[in-house]
Amino acid sequence: MTLRPDPSRAGAVLARLDGLRAAVAAGEDDVLVCLVVTGEPRPQRVLDDWLDQVADTLRALGETAADLGPVVGRYAVPAPDADRVAPTPEADLAAPAPDADRAASARPGTWS
Image 1 (spheres, one colour):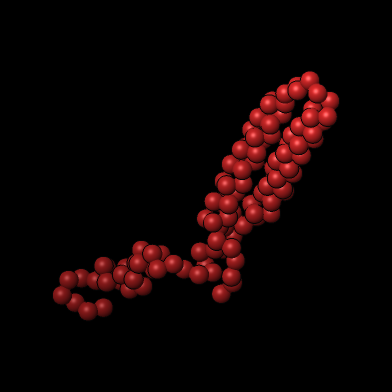
Image 2 (cartoon, rainbow, N blue to C red):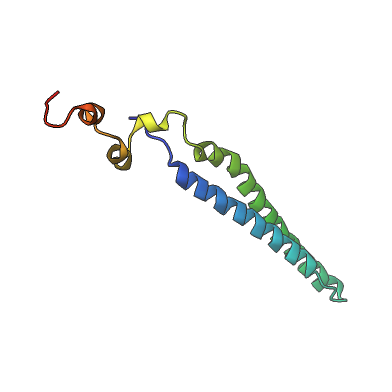
């Protein structure tokens, strides 16, 4: 039996990464919008530097989430022969018994 990542969990991770990228992009825009003018050169430089660091950190976080997307995406799609690798109990219950067709075609009261 081959072990591999669970496609449903990989899909959930992709959705979370997309949400993270959207939130980080919105946060970066919000940080850059709140740039204020203090009127004092030294405090203005400190404030500008701090806001730039926050925006750069958010941008780097979004880029990392974007870089992880394709890597995780490879596991989000099940392999073509996934149903043959390890059948689930639900699939076993849904499958007809091997002799079901023969039993159904037999005449009532006779053994085949």
